[in-house]
Image (cartoon, rainbow, N blue to C red; front, side, top):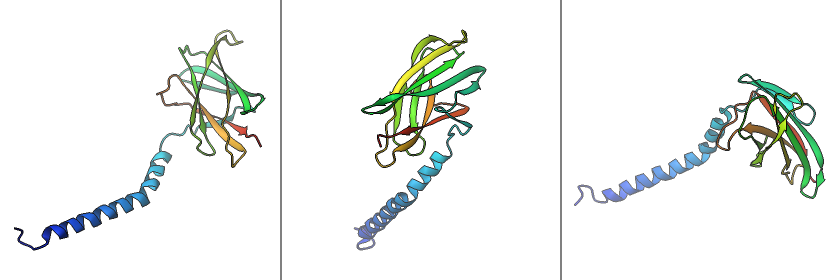
Length: 169
């Protein structure tokens, strides 16, 4: 027998109140904390280059890179784009990952195909064709393209490659 009658009931009530308060606090502050954590991650905040209007050029770890994006016509799914990347770095594979910059619509891997040697004769040439997903509420969407050597590698690019995609209007 307990020294205090109803002592277990009081203890259960206190634990329940603490658990409910904890869930409430986590629900209120949790998203803010997560957003703060995400904001503290590196975001490739170096130079920004608009791939549709410029040939983006940068040097990374002693290797030269060029990237260019052109519209390749409008299909039923939306505007098709053609991405071309050249680098003097010897890569076994290259992956472009499409990420929403103006709003989050997910991440879309775009496998790139080795297309031979670049016109300069010393660089590998990589190409890919893709259709950028579009938002149904906002016909114009800014996307970022991160280049990766493998699916699980996080990009550490000194330049942010962006472009504004048009929806189906």
